[in-house]
Image (tube, rainbow, N blue to C red; front, side, top):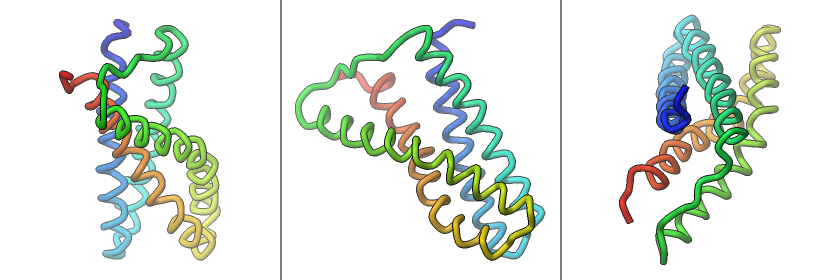
Length: 139
């Protein structure tokens, strides 16, 4: 696979995960538990595939230098740092949230999901923003 394609694939996976998270949230609020489970399961799958591609890409390519200067550079690194910290923190939260759901421990699941969901959504959305700022904007 051409390494140049992986960042776009990763952005698509992040964007898809974010959409699935939003759909899953709306589904559970509307008491459509089956649809919620489907959306969240697919969001987990998208995020897992993303992680595989991400690790493969950075193992073979290394890091990519941000070309922007001035205030946009500060904005980029602010987003990147918060994204990176929260991405590392959200993985165990996702695993615990899924574990509780699979064990049908609904009250515990809901409690941790209230923390997991916004962090996971932020990481998914900022992943797309980082891709856009790094690969699509011409500075």
